[in-house]
Length: 512
Ligand code: NAI
Image (tube, rainbow, N blue to C red; front, side, top):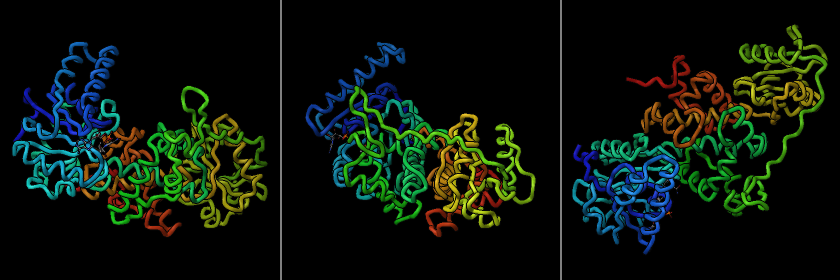
């Protein structure tokens, strides 16, 4: 390695001291590193240092560090007039405006200012690292170093090698990331890098399903929280980030992948983006907001109360033995005796438990009366919430009877319209599919993908863990069936996933 980042006199430069630059400077200084900091706007770097000083003082008050360490960390930050003063730096981190020309102009000047072995990195969140570095005289020492907002709280940093980046540069950045108390993950340049690619699976599939009329924003959020185990539903998350960030990022990733359909943007996002209905920041988004109190409160449409209706009799299809067994067991706990006949009696509510199939296909392929068919999602534990769906012909009385029955122990039930994969099956299958595509493209290793996704997105599991928990064959089946149902390449299973499903092995299995 040409640079020993553990050296006590290490100097890191930070250019651009906005939301990201100040966070990066803070964690570097707290990691015992000397920091030179600059910003094009006069006074901005000084403001940033004051801000960092306060943040570190607060950390000391909370007992996260000693008062002396906090003061010493702030003392390690020196403000300089411009990037022209970055000559002493061993590494320079750029966190200026997200504009290719501005970044290229900065690095073109910088490479003549710093020493030949100084590493130059960009914190870009959306541009190709190879593209930014392409015009440099020394692109081999240029890389991506992608932090997450707010930096002091988000441990993940993506270390991204461009096409021309030399190995030692990323080795040094991995070590530097650790010294800055981060959890670095190594990857090769790709649109959306790693975390932002996976995030498309969550947000875009949710939008596509609402656009299709399967469900609504609030119900999708409820299902993804209670059934999928996510801390926030996709729409809540987009409300927080703002569609001014999410929509352009989605369009960019889609186009950078040459219109790869897996990343196809959504009209639901686009129209809101254009109308300025961006989320919390505009006090109107997928949800309306109550602005009367001190804190902005989302007005969440209440759930329809569970109907009092119960079915006269219940028959459960055995076409999916695992799902059928789980459902019969649950119905037993609810005090229901399930019909034993090979066919349902003439008045029975017919329950099916498809994986990746819609209720219509389950009904027609099994020769069942679609007016009495209700599908139940049994792939997930039916403990906090249950999801059911109907065919276009399902009698509302049958739907209500199924709803009432499955909610009779107080567990809420979400009813959605016909959908291959209900709500959670299809969103999680998309997350897995994108994770597998990242591994197949050798952008990052499966273990690193899971690590990055849990740290950077706070998902309950990374894509690979989700696949192993829910079953690789099940995930493959969901995607394969969706692909056939819609005839839309958006849903085609990635070859990484297909091979491992065929071989009956974990998706974590890597080729030697
Ligand atoms: P910001 O707008 O808060 O800060 C940018 C700062 O750079 C401003 O203080 C501005 O005065 C300064 N600046 C602009 N041009 C400059 C130049 N030529 N030389 C020196 N200073 C200059 O922006 P933010 O959010 O901190 O983003 C910075 C970079 O980090 C962008 O590339 C962005 O894509 C990336 N990023 C942002 C994330 C976020 O959530 N905000 C997350 C990860 C990466």
